[in-house]
Image 1 (cartoon, rainbow, N blue to C red):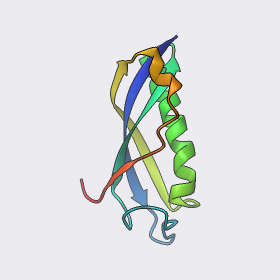
Image 2 (cartoon, one colour):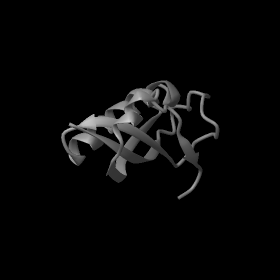
Image 3 (cartoon, one colour):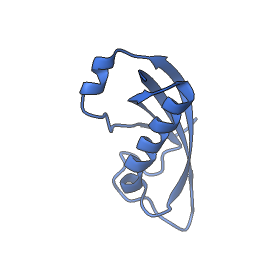
Length: 98
């Protein structure tokens, strides 16, 4: 097992009939970037674990089915193990247009 840094890019597709939760910094962002440090066997497992954490965190931000999200690992790299000791970064950097 190794510590990995995963930079996640998320693209959002909004459903017109459901408004966002109101917890976002902008009305209907087109997407976001965030990162996670995870413990995993390889890069693929690290990406999946990071995606799971991001999806869990987004549940409260997006509301009930207001948007679908497509996640992509922009960068996956081995990181020092001490990065796992820090509290999980739950922040996202949202953007309006691509």
